[in-house]
Length: 377
Image (tube, one colour):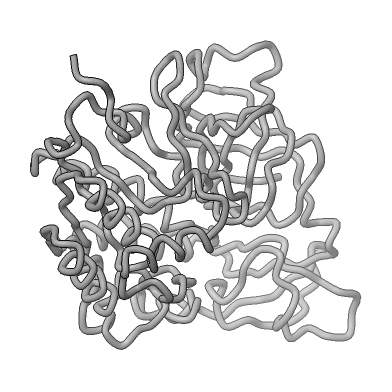
């Protein structure tokens, strides 16, 4: 029997085919270059996810025309084949349309999670298998370990780069096939040092900041383009019922927003709720933003045993309700219909429908799954 190679596959390195999802950035480029240097049979694949003409005019996003060009250059430099796949229709139907509809409904969607869940780890993963690959590798900062009950997902070694919040929907079946070669690195400086070592043309390329189809972070402009007439005016209403002013559309506001409300003359007020149906932006004091209990749906559970086989009172876990916040203690109680109630030990502000709630083990670095926030009291 063959011993396991560095990717945990019982085959010689030269006979192990790896499809690398290449965004054109430094992270995935380093993954591809490192595996090629080690002697793996590397195939690079880049996804064209939205209008290429628009992409060429946009900087700072992960899937633009420039990035496709950069991924191709890396493949040429390292001597492995590279393909560009047109996934525009799939991306439109499974990510962009839902993003627009959720935003119009007053939610705060996280399209990068849906992209991983529905496009990269489903359609692209299937393509990798069609290409005869033994596994698919990405440049995500997250770790995969083989546990007693199968592969486990763990936070990255570098907490500042950890991308576990965006990968909680990964299933055990997908995790069996996926590899994340950068998860053990302690800093982005290490990644860039590897890029220079391999002589990659993207070694000093800036990190992408925006959602790939949202230029300059302007969600509202994208929604207006996707759903003409969506920005309907309405009232800005205090929690006590007083109408304080008018707004130009709920799509221009987010939960927790304080600036730009145009209702000066009172104590500091924050957006505490968006009521798309009545076209109201509800505001109140900061204390009104604090939430301790909320509901989630579409649970993906990566722990053992079964999620519904919870101890009395629910699962004690750590949870993240924003990608930029540290995990905090909470209890997750499974309920009927694939839903669950989350109760935080300490109330947090700014929790809103459409965001993800990701579960972590109380000790250690393991990710136990998560769900989507549906409503808050």
